Length: 639
Image (cartoon, rainbow, N blue to C red; front, top):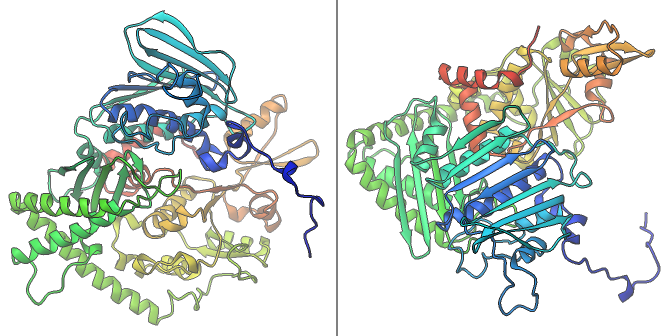
């Protein structure tokens, strides 16, 4: 079918030029990724990044983030303060602060004189925050006075005014996100706390405080890391049994670049490497990560040969062996980083590969020579991993011969869908045979597949790959999804665009969801990063009111419904499990695309997620107890 033209003419009169920040308001996703919760919190990160840049330049020691009762957010620092006079030799005679807040690609980060390193080199940060805020107020302490200016949706509504004298310096930006732009306006303290804690590790010695004044009294957290990345590794490795007591920590410098590395091996099996460039989390890696991995393999193999720990006839250890149980942070600072767009997820500066490789080669070699007992234990751990890799290969070959891992030989209990286009197909991983039977009847066979699993799958946090591959339920998962696992993983072979976990809305169901999410995070992380993993939200209650049935997700929804109906006696029916629902109920509440609620699992912060799975699914009972006590008020209690 031909697309009809919108109009017959196309002349110069049809060309639209978006002035100022209008482009940001028209297409906010181009600048902050999304107008959902992730984009909302991105506003805070952009403002905080400016303060962190002041800290990296050596002019800021304290940053305070306040969540205000009226929905606003305030970020204050004791840096130099945004300049208040007009920019020299510029035709624009407005104060520099106003230019910075209302013009894209305006800031002190492009000339290279004010900031040696910076995360916000695209120069859109604070101006985008201004454009997407219904109101923004800036206060600047500089040149002996306090200065202030107010904006609405990116437009100045007052001029920059000089107020009282002050001997202090710094910038305070207070903003209120625009409800016309964002889908929700509620800042999540825990999400912000994770990022601010991370920034404190990356900017050693700088104090970063978070105060949630929506609560009474205000909930306050203060983050400061005197040990820098070494403290970061200890934080991530808490709950893991270390192979060597002291964290390996070193720095390298040259011209206008710097690399800092901290690493420690533990008895676990998960590889946990996180990289940063100018405090920006480069979760897709890049040149600095490539240099680190290459040097790591070279140094460990060279050391193992030199100390006769690896025999002459034995093959070299591969990177996978060496990185098993490794927690490592690689952070580089450089003058002109090359990122993939404003999302800044992969570092492209080729010179950083050789710089990091050279630094790690020299420094790690020296450390191993100075700590021979630790070096021997590290190599021993790597050699154990190599043996386990061979066992995993044998297990994989055995299961492949049986056809259990091949996408062409689908598991027998899978009820597949009729279509084959991953863009429209989805699979529900359903707890229990009874619920699986109901789901098979309830589904739309054309695009919905059902894979029932029996009981709780293996906790992959505590098992090596060869043990994981022996688990029947995991074999079924791998075969159904089609991507393979480990070094054979290929995301393009995924048979379903949506992979939804469907478990009971009780404590056991929550445990099963966590076990499955741990498996996906550790062994199919790309599916999480691509947004393929979902959690279905089956209702816990059914209530009859006004002559019809209402399905309610949990106790909070039940209480809200009760209040909405004047606290009438409701006599709610509580579903003990998915098996209690008939196919019609399961379809209309949980599987019907027009009515269901699916929560997409996203990976906001890989380091924080890594730490979370270690705490929840690892061996350290005390760390798990501390987490539960700290987060008990957010928990669902099954009564």
